Image 1 (cartoon, rainbow, N blue to C red):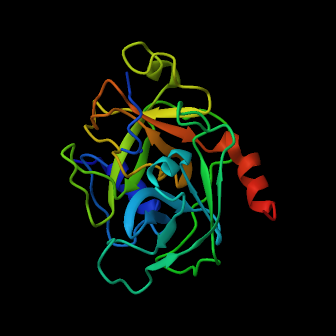
Image 2: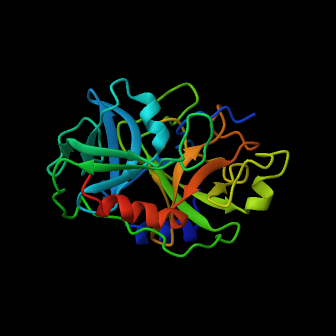
Length: 256
């Protein structure tokens, strides 16, 4: 069961580890359009990764999502609760530009950010809204409860939901996440982790690129975790947003 704190946060807001990209396990369905910033990055009508709207023209996601697209192209679904059911404000947008962080690589989890420019400005409204980014470059206290959401696998057997799922996840300190029993020094100052053991909830494959929302702002972007979602020895990994604001703003301001 979610704590009272988790419910309040949810209402106010309305992610050897083997690099399984994406990874919400143990979560529950959101209220329809309770997270109107959520985006589904798709190829050929199939959900590949999550993302979230940060301006009328731009979605932030994870660079490793490009590994899962055969043609290096995406379409972006906004305003969706269900991926398949008709909904009045759901719309699929083309993509004008994809900008992966130049430091990103298939070999590591570093600099794992992707900016997606829509082919035209999104139509904003109750079901489509932007999510503010964390601007203060500081580490959150451990056990800060944050929210993750996505259309990723809900079971390790590969069961994927049609409707948006969410979970409340507590952060871990970087020092603890870097202990040998967890990620053994792999977590850099530009990354953060969430705990799995005490809450038995996790992000899972297909949730990559979605936001970790803490106190109403995007604190991180879902990156990776264990090949087996919910493995308490391999906490979920997120790319922190604040250190990348100069790059994000620079890309969005550039003409091409």
